[in-house]
Image (cartoon, rainbow, N blue to C red):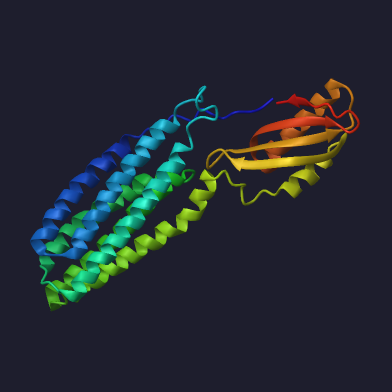
Length: 297
C-alpha cells in the first residue's frame, strides 16, 4: 500500500510568461545600446539577460510538463523535468560565463573607447526589469530547484546591472575605460561561481542519490522498535524529485498471520512518513523461518 503525491497543485504561470517577454525585449535594447556605446560589459549583460529569458522559458516549459499526472510511460509522474531544466540552465550559465571571460581577455589586449552615458541609461532600464523578474522567480523558488536556478540568473543579472551603472558613471566622469573590462570579469566570475555551486545537488538528484539528512541505519533502528520485527535489510532510499522521497526494503518479521503482517506494514509506513518524510515505500516481508516471501506494497 503506497501513498502517492503525483498531482502537483495548479500553478499560475502568467507572470513567468510576462517575465520571458520583458527579458527578451530588454536583451534587444541592451544589444543595441552595447553596440552603439562600444561597451563589452553592456553586451555581456545583454547576453546574460538573453540567458535569463532562455532559463525562464525552459523553467516554464518544465513546470508545464511537471504538471502532467503519472501514466504508463512515467509511473512516478513528470516532476523531475524541473530538475533536468535546472541542469540545462546551470550549463547555460557556465557556458556564458566562460564566453564573457574570453571576450574580456581580448579587451585587455585591445582596449576600446566606450560611451558612459548610454551605458548608464541602458543599464538602469535593465536593473528595473531585473528586479521585477527576480521578484517573480523568487516567489516560486522556495520548493523548486528549477525556479531557484532561474532566480539566481535574475539575481546575478541585477547585480551585474548595478555594476554596469557604476562602470558607466566612472567612464562618463573620468574616462576609466578599463572599468568596463574589469566589470566583465567580475560579472562572469560571479555567474560561474553561482552555477558551479548548484551542480553537485542537481546531479545528485538526477543520479537518484539518497537524501543527505536520511541514513539507512536510523531507519533500521526506528523500524526495529516496532514489535514483531527482527531485521530490516536491502534498504534503498532515493529522491523521486526535489520534494518526494521513496524507499524500498526487506523486513524480517516473526508474525505468521497475514493480518499481523498488514498491521506491521501500516505502522512502518506511518513511521516512514511522519519521521523521515518518505511518502512512497515498497516493503517486502520475510519470515525468519519460512524463507518464502510475500510482497506487500
